[in-house]
Length: 372
Image (cartoon, rainbow, N blue to C red):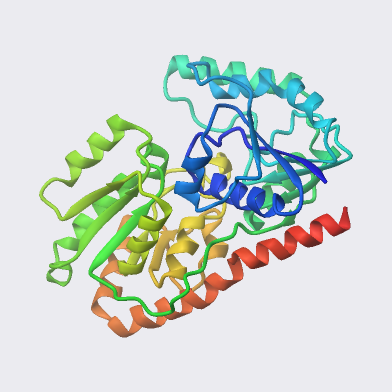
Protein backbone atom coordinates (compact mmCIF):
# COMPACT_ATOMS: atom_id res chain seq x y z
CA UNK A 1 0.00 0.00 0.00
CA UNK A 2 1.24 3.49 -0.84
CA UNK A 3 0.74 5.80 2.18
CA UNK A 4 1.03 9.56 2.67
CA UNK A 5 1.45 10.49 6.34
CA UNK A 6 1.10 14.21 7.16
CA UNK A 7 2.53 15.87 10.28
CA UNK A 8 3.14 19.60 9.82
CA UNK A 9 4.99 19.98 13.16
CA UNK A 10 7.70 17.38 12.70
CA UNK A 11 10.37 20.11 13.08
CA UNK A 12 9.38 20.44 16.75
CA UNK A 13 10.13 17.94 19.51
CA UNK A 14 7.04 16.64 21.27
CA UNK A 15 4.93 13.67 22.31
CA UNK A 16 2.64 13.91 19.31
CA UNK A 17 5.60 13.82 16.93
CA UNK A 18 7.07 10.82 18.76
CA UNK A 19 3.76 8.97 18.37
CA UNK A 20 3.58 9.85 14.66
CA UNK A 21 7.14 8.66 14.04
CA UNK A 22 6.39 5.36 15.82
CA UNK A 23 3.38 4.81 13.54
CA UNK A 24 5.37 5.71 10.42
CA UNK A 25 8.20 3.37 11.43
CA UNK A 26 5.74 0.51 11.91
CA UNK A 27 3.85 1.16 8.66
CA UNK A 28 7.09 1.37 6.66
CA UNK A 29 7.95 -2.25 7.45
CA UNK A 30 5.30 -3.50 5.03
CA UNK A 31 4.20 -0.42 3.07
CA UNK A 32 5.63 2.39 0.98
CA UNK A 33 5.37 5.47 3.22
CA UNK A 34 6.00 9.13 2.41
CA UNK A 35 6.16 11.43 5.44
CA UNK A 36 4.97 14.96 4.64
CA UNK A 37 5.80 17.89 6.89
CA UNK A 38 5.87 21.68 6.76
CA UNK A 39 9.60 22.36 7.19
CA UNK A 40 12.71 20.26 6.42
CA UNK A 41 13.76 17.68 9.03
CA UNK A 42 16.62 15.20 9.23
CA UNK A 43 16.05 11.49 9.78
CA UNK A 44 19.04 11.30 12.11
CA UNK A 45 17.46 13.88 14.42
CA UNK A 46 14.20 11.93 14.55
CA UNK A 47 16.17 8.76 15.32
CA UNK A 48 18.05 10.55 18.12
CA UNK A 49 15.00 12.01 19.84
CA UNK A 50 12.49 9.21 19.27
CA UNK A 51 14.56 6.01 18.81
CA UNK A 52 12.96 5.23 15.44
CA UNK A 53 14.29 3.80 12.19
CA UNK A 54 12.88 5.69 9.20
CA UNK A 55 15.41 4.44 6.64
CA UNK A 56 12.61 3.12 4.40
CA UNK A 57 10.63 6.36 4.62
CA UNK A 58 10.80 9.29 2.19
CA UNK A 59 10.41 12.69 3.90
CA UNK A 60 8.77 15.51 1.93
CA UNK A 61 8.54 19.13 3.06
CA UNK A 62 6.23 21.90 1.88
CA UNK A 63 8.25 25.00 2.77
CA UNK A 64 11.58 26.30 3.99
CA UNK A 65 11.50 27.48 7.59
CA UNK A 66 10.71 31.19 7.75
CA UNK A 67 8.97 33.80 9.85
CA UNK A 68 5.48 33.34 8.39
CA UNK A 69 3.04 32.23 11.08
CA UNK A 70 2.58 28.45 10.88
CA UNK A 71 -1.22 28.72 11.23
CA UNK A 72 -1.28 30.77 8.03
CA UNK A 73 1.06 28.35 6.24
CA UNK A 74 -1.16 25.41 7.13
CA UNK A 75 -4.13 27.23 5.61
CA UNK A 76 -2.12 28.20 2.55
CA UNK A 77 -0.94 24.64 1.78
CA UNK A 78 -4.24 22.83 2.43
CA UNK A 79 -5.20 22.58 -1.26
CA UNK A 80 -1.73 21.41 -2.30
CA UNK A 81 -1.82 18.63 0.32
CA UNK A 82 -5.31 17.64 -0.81
CA UNK A 83 -4.15 17.29 -4.42
CA UNK A 84 -1.07 15.33 -3.35
CA UNK A 85 -3.20 12.88 -1.32
CA UNK A 86 -4.97 11.74 -4.52
CA UNK A 87 -1.77 9.91 -5.56
CA UNK A 88 -1.92 7.49 -2.60
CA UNK A 89 -3.89 4.45 -1.44
CA UNK A 90 -4.06 5.81 2.12
CA UNK A 91 -3.83 9.38 3.36
CA UNK A 92 -3.19 9.61 7.09
CA UNK A 93 -3.73 13.20 8.24
CA UNK A 94 -2.19 13.16 11.69
CA UNK A 95 -2.57 16.84 12.52
CA UNK A 96 -6.33 17.27 12.73
CA UNK A 97 -6.16 19.58 9.70
CA UNK A 98 -9.85 19.45 8.97
CA UNK A 99 -9.54 21.94 6.11
CA UNK A 100 -7.70 19.38 3.93
CA UNK A 101 -10.06 17.63 1.53
CA UNK A 102 -9.01 13.94 1.45
CA UNK A 103 -8.68 12.47 -2.06
CA UNK A 104 -6.88 9.15 -1.45
CA UNK A 105 -8.60 5.78 -1.80
CA UNK A 106 -8.76 5.55 2.02
CA UNK A 107 -8.49 8.52 4.39
CA UNK A 108 -7.84 8.66 8.12
CA UNK A 109 -7.77 11.71 10.38
CA UNK A 110 -5.86 11.21 13.63
CA UNK A 111 -6.33 13.88 16.30
CA UNK A 112 -3.84 14.51 19.08
CA UNK A 113 -6.16 17.47 19.45
CA UNK A 114 -7.30 20.29 17.19
CA UNK A 115 -7.51 24.05 17.14
CA UNK A 116 -11.03 25.44 17.54
CA UNK A 117 -11.52 28.66 15.58
CA UNK A 118 -10.78 30.69 18.73
CA UNK A 119 -8.33 28.44 20.52
CA UNK A 120 -6.50 30.66 23.04
CA UNK A 121 -6.68 34.06 24.76
CA UNK A 122 -4.82 36.94 23.02
CA UNK A 123 -1.45 38.06 24.41
CA UNK A 124 -1.84 41.69 23.34
CA UNK A 125 -3.76 43.90 20.89
CA UNK A 126 -1.72 42.87 17.85
CA UNK A 127 -2.03 39.22 18.79
CA UNK A 128 -5.78 39.77 19.09
CA UNK A 129 -5.87 41.05 15.49
CA UNK A 130 -3.87 38.01 14.37
CA UNK A 131 -6.31 35.65 16.09
CA UNK A 132 -9.23 37.43 14.42
CA UNK A 133 -7.55 36.94 11.04
CA UNK A 134 -7.01 33.23 11.67
CA UNK A 135 -10.58 32.91 12.94
CA UNK A 136 -12.08 34.34 9.75
CA UNK A 137 -9.74 32.39 7.49
CA UNK A 138 -10.77 29.15 9.21
CA UNK A 139 -14.41 30.19 9.05
CA UNK A 140 -14.39 30.41 5.24
CA UNK A 141 -12.59 27.07 4.92
CA UNK A 142 -14.72 23.96 4.80
CA UNK A 143 -14.44 21.33 7.56
CA UNK A 144 -13.82 17.95 5.88
CA UNK A 145 -13.51 15.91 9.10
CA UNK A 146 -16.65 13.87 8.26
CA UNK A 147 -14.98 12.73 5.02
CA UNK A 148 -12.40 10.78 7.06
CA UNK A 149 -12.40 7.83 9.39
CA UNK A 150 -11.51 9.65 12.61
CA UNK A 151 -9.25 8.38 15.40
CA UNK A 152 -7.84 10.22 18.40
CA UNK A 153 -5.43 9.86 21.33
CA UNK A 154 -7.78 9.92 24.35
CA UNK A 155 -11.34 9.94 25.63
CA UNK A 156 -10.81 13.62 26.42
CA UNK A 157 -10.11 14.38 22.75
CA UNK A 158 -12.96 12.16 21.60
CA UNK A 159 -15.41 14.09 23.79
CA UNK A 160 -14.38 17.45 22.29
CA UNK A 161 -14.41 16.13 18.72
CA UNK A 162 -18.01 15.11 19.23
CA UNK A 163 -18.91 18.41 20.89
CA UNK A 164 -17.23 20.83 18.44
CA UNK A 165 -17.05 18.95 15.13
CA UNK A 166 -19.90 16.49 15.62
CA UNK A 167 -17.77 13.49 14.60
CA UNK A 168 -17.52 10.08 16.26
CA UNK A 169 -13.91 9.07 16.81
CA UNK A 170 -12.24 5.87 17.99
CA UNK A 171 -9.37 5.99 20.48
CA UNK A 172 -5.87 4.68 19.76
CA UNK A 173 -3.69 5.61 22.72
CA UNK A 174 -0.16 6.91 22.05
CA UNK A 175 2.48 4.21 22.59
CA UNK A 176 5.42 4.19 24.96
CA UNK A 177 8.54 2.03 24.92
CA UNK A 178 8.27 -0.12 28.02
CA UNK A 179 11.62 -0.66 29.81
CA UNK A 180 13.03 -4.19 29.84
CA UNK A 181 13.83 -4.10 33.55
CA UNK A 182 11.26 -3.98 36.35
CA UNK A 183 13.41 -2.68 39.21
CA UNK A 184 15.30 0.60 39.25
CA UNK A 185 17.90 2.16 41.52
CA UNK A 186 16.14 5.34 42.52
CA UNK A 187 17.76 8.55 43.73
CA UNK A 188 16.24 11.56 45.48
CA UNK A 189 15.23 13.22 42.23
CA UNK A 190 11.97 14.88 41.21
CA UNK A 191 11.54 15.55 37.49
CA UNK A 192 9.36 17.52 35.10
CA UNK A 193 9.74 16.94 31.35
CA UNK A 194 8.62 18.41 28.05
CA UNK A 195 9.43 21.32 25.75
CA UNK A 196 10.86 24.30 27.62
CA UNK A 197 8.09 26.69 26.59
CA UNK A 198 5.63 28.85 28.58
CA UNK A 199 2.61 26.61 27.89
CA UNK A 200 4.21 23.91 30.07
CA UNK A 201 4.01 26.14 33.18
CA UNK A 202 7.35 25.16 34.72
CA UNK A 203 7.05 28.13 37.11
CA UNK A 204 4.25 26.19 38.82
CA UNK A 205 6.48 23.12 39.18
CA UNK A 206 9.48 25.13 40.42
CA UNK A 207 7.49 27.13 42.99
CA UNK A 208 5.84 23.93 44.25
CA UNK A 209 9.24 22.30 44.74
CA UNK A 210 10.63 25.40 46.47
CA UNK A 211 7.78 25.39 48.98
CA UNK A 212 8.17 21.67 49.66
CA UNK A 213 11.95 22.10 49.98
CA UNK A 214 11.47 24.38 52.98
CA UNK A 215 10.74 21.27 55.06
CA UNK A 216 13.53 18.99 56.35
CA UNK A 217 11.97 16.03 54.50
CA UNK A 218 13.27 17.28 51.15
CA UNK A 219 16.74 18.20 52.39
CA UNK A 220 18.61 15.90 49.98
CA UNK A 221 16.15 16.08 47.08
CA UNK A 222 16.69 17.93 43.81
CA UNK A 223 14.45 18.94 40.91
CA UNK A 224 15.43 18.32 37.30
CA UNK A 225 13.66 20.14 34.45
CA UNK A 226 14.26 18.05 31.33
CA UNK A 227 13.38 18.90 27.74
CA UNK A 228 14.17 20.64 24.49
CA UNK A 229 14.84 24.36 24.72
CA UNK A 230 12.01 26.00 22.78
CA UNK A 231 12.08 29.53 24.19
CA UNK A 232 15.43 30.92 25.40
CA UNK A 233 13.99 33.94 27.21
CA UNK A 234 11.63 31.62 29.09
CA UNK A 235 14.55 29.38 30.06
CA UNK A 236 16.43 32.39 31.46
CA UNK A 237 13.34 33.32 33.49
CA UNK A 238 13.12 29.80 34.92
CA UNK A 239 16.80 29.74 35.86
CA UNK A 240 16.39 33.06 37.60
CA UNK A 241 13.54 31.88 39.84
CA UNK A 242 15.45 28.64 40.55
CA UNK A 243 18.53 30.31 42.05
CA UNK A 244 19.43 29.16 45.53
CA UNK A 245 17.69 25.81 45.18
CA UNK A 246 18.91 22.39 43.95
CA UNK A 247 17.20 22.76 40.58
CA UNK A 248 18.98 21.68 37.40
CA UNK A 249 18.06 21.98 33.71
CA UNK A 250 18.79 19.01 31.44
CA UNK A 251 18.35 20.24 27.88
CA UNK A 252 18.04 18.72 24.40
CA UNK A 253 18.41 15.14 25.59
CA UNK A 254 18.44 12.08 23.39
CA UNK A 255 15.79 9.42 23.96
CA UNK A 256 18.39 7.21 25.66
CA UNK A 257 19.39 9.94 28.14
CA UNK A 258 15.74 10.65 28.92
CA UNK A 259 15.21 7.00 29.82
CA UNK A 260 18.25 7.00 32.11
CA UNK A 261 16.78 9.98 33.97
CA UNK A 262 13.42 8.24 34.35
CA UNK A 263 15.24 5.24 35.85
CA UNK A 264 16.78 7.40 38.59
CA UNK A 265 13.77 9.58 39.46
CA UNK A 266 11.19 8.99 42.16
CA UNK A 267 8.53 11.63 41.50
CA UNK A 268 7.22 13.28 38.34
CA UNK A 269 5.38 16.64 38.31
CA UNK A 270 3.54 18.29 35.44
CA UNK A 271 1.86 21.71 35.56
CA UNK A 272 0.46 22.35 32.08
CA UNK A 273 -3.01 23.90 32.19
CA UNK A 274 -2.94 25.32 35.72
CA UNK A 275 -4.51 28.67 34.76
CA UNK A 276 -6.55 27.45 31.79
CA UNK A 277 -10.35 27.38 31.66
CA UNK A 278 -10.94 23.79 30.52
CA UNK A 279 -14.36 24.52 29.02
CA UNK A 280 -13.23 27.65 27.13
CA UNK A 281 -9.79 26.62 25.83
CA UNK A 282 -9.65 22.79 25.82
CA UNK A 283 -6.85 22.68 23.24
CA UNK A 284 -4.42 24.34 25.69
CA UNK A 285 -4.51 21.41 28.11
CA UNK A 286 -2.59 18.15 27.94
CA UNK A 287 -4.79 15.93 25.81
CA UNK A 288 -3.25 12.64 26.91
CA UNK A 289 0.18 13.17 28.46
CA UNK A 290 2.70 10.65 27.08
CA UNK A 291 5.45 11.86 29.41
CA UNK A 292 3.32 10.99 32.45
CA UNK A 293 2.85 7.42 31.24
CA UNK A 294 6.54 7.13 30.29
CA UNK A 295 7.45 8.24 33.80
CA UNK A 296 5.08 5.67 35.33
CA UNK A 297 6.59 2.89 33.23
CA UNK A 298 9.92 3.59 34.96
CA UNK A 299 8.38 3.65 38.42
CA UNK A 300 8.11 7.45 38.83
CA UNK A 301 4.99 8.47 40.75
CA UNK A 302 3.19 11.29 38.87
CA UNK A 303 1.61 14.42 40.31
CA UNK A 304 -0.39 16.22 37.61
CA UNK A 305 -3.32 18.57 37.24
CA UNK A 306 -6.84 17.21 37.51
CA UNK A 307 -7.58 18.35 33.96
CA UNK A 308 -7.54 17.09 30.39
CA UNK A 309 -6.04 13.74 29.49
CA UNK A 310 -4.35 13.31 32.86
CA UNK A 311 -7.71 12.19 34.23
CA UNK A 312 -7.50 8.95 32.23
CA UNK A 313 -3.73 8.32 32.17
CA UNK A 314 -3.45 8.49 36.00
CA UNK A 315 -5.65 6.66 38.50
CA UNK A 316 -5.75 6.74 42.31
CA UNK A 317 -3.37 3.78 42.65
CA UNK A 318 -0.65 5.17 40.38
CA UNK A 319 -0.45 8.90 41.17
CA UNK A 320 -2.12 12.12 42.26
CA UNK A 321 -4.40 14.51 40.35
CA UNK A 322 -4.32 17.95 41.93
CA UNK A 323 -5.95 21.36 41.51
CA UNK A 324 -3.67 23.74 43.41
CA UNK A 325 -0.04 24.35 44.31
CA UNK A 326 -0.82 23.56 47.94
CA UNK A 327 -2.06 20.11 46.90
CA UNK A 328 1.14 19.49 44.91
CA UNK A 329 3.26 20.34 47.97
CA UNK A 330 1.17 18.04 50.19
CA UNK A 331 1.51 15.17 47.72
CA UNK A 332 5.29 15.60 47.46
CA UNK A 333 5.66 15.53 51.24
CA UNK A 334 3.28 12.59 51.53
CA UNK A 335 5.37 10.50 49.11
CA UNK A 336 8.73 11.52 50.58
CA UNK A 337 7.52 10.81 54.12
CA UNK A 338 5.95 7.44 53.30
CA UNK A 339 8.39 5.21 51.39
CA UNK A 340 5.91 2.34 51.45
CA UNK A 341 3.25 4.43 49.71
CA UNK A 342 5.76 5.64 47.12
CA UNK A 343 6.91 2.07 46.47
CA UNK A 344 3.36 0.72 46.06
CA UNK A 345 2.30 3.53 43.72
CA UNK A 346 5.50 3.06 41.75
CA UNK A 347 4.74 -0.64 41.21
CA UNK A 348 1.12 0.13 40.26
CA UNK A 349 2.32 2.70 37.74
CA UNK A 350 4.66 0.21 36.06
CA UNK A 351 1.75 -2.22 35.75
CA UNK A 352 -0.70 0.41 34.42
CA UNK A 353 1.78 1.69 31.81
CA UNK A 354 1.51 -1.65 29.99
CA UNK A 355 -1.96 -0.57 28.84
CA UNK A 356 -0.21 1.99 26.63
CA UNK A 357 2.52 -0.22 25.17
CA UNK A 358 3.89 0.03 21.64
CA UNK A 359 2.61 -3.49 20.94
CA UNK A 360 -0.97 -2.54 21.81
CA UNK A 361 -0.81 0.43 19.46
CA UNK A 362 0.54 -1.78 16.68
CA UNK A 363 -2.30 -4.26 17.19
CA UNK A 364 -4.83 -1.45 16.74
CA UNK A 365 -3.06 -0.18 13.61
CA UNK A 366 -3.16 -3.72 12.14
CA UNK A 367 -6.87 -3.98 12.88
CA UNK A 368 -7.46 -0.54 11.35
CA UNK A 369 -5.69 -1.55 8.09
CA UNK A 370 -7.59 -4.85 7.91
CA UNK A 371 -10.88 -2.96 8.27
CA UNK A 372 -9.88 -0.69 5.39
